[in-house]
Length: 124
Image 1 (cartoon, helix red, strand yellow):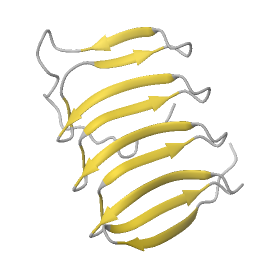
Image 2 (image 1 turned 120 degrees about the vertical axis):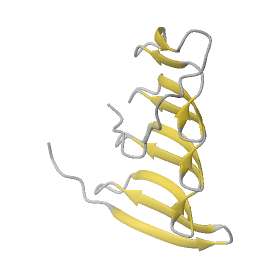
Image 3 (image 1 turned 90 degrees about the horizontal axis):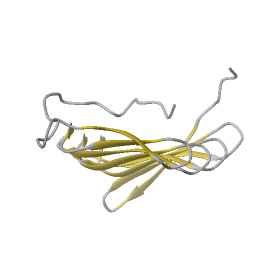
C-alpha cells in the first residue's frame, strides 16, 4: 500500500477555521471546520477517486446528526443516527448495489449504551 502525503490548507473564517486536506495527487481528501480548535459543523471525506466516502455533523467536537458512508462507486454503504456521540435509533447497512443488508437496533428502543468515537473510522 503506497503512502499518501497530505497537504493541509487552513483558511480563517468568521466561524473558525476551514480545514482541507488533499491526497498527494491533489484530489481533496477531507474538509471540516474547527471552532477554537474543536471540530464543529459538517465533516466530509472523499475517496481518492473523488467520490464522497463519509459525511457527518459535529457540534462542539461531538458527532451529532446522521453519519453517512458510501462505497467508492457512490452507493450508500451505511447510515447511523447519532445524538450527542451515541447511536440513537436504527443503524442501516447496505450492499454495494444499494440494497438494505441489515439493521442494528435494540427492539424498539435506541442504541445508546456506548459513547462512540467515529472520528478515526476508515471508509472500508
